[in-house]
Length: 98
Image 1 (cartoon, rainbow, N blue to C red):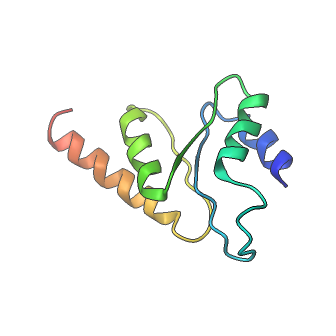
Image 2 (cartoon, helix red, strand yellow):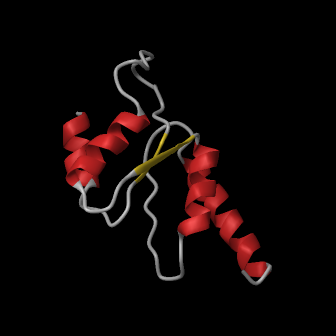
């Protein structure tokens, strides 16, 4: 479903793709976050990125999210860590006046 995901994600202003969680299929050689980011980038105006782990993805987002932005986090496994960490990072930055 790589192409189908790429078509949909290419409609977003920006797509940031964390490492893919192999919940049902433990074969991680089928595809990767980098492959999906390349497929999205081929169809989008703005290039997609694949920073890596959910922690690195949250860190990546925290450096780029600005007031008024909407961030949608979805996925399986530990994807909830992206949202939790992003909120914590942005709250810390706001408290520090950044």
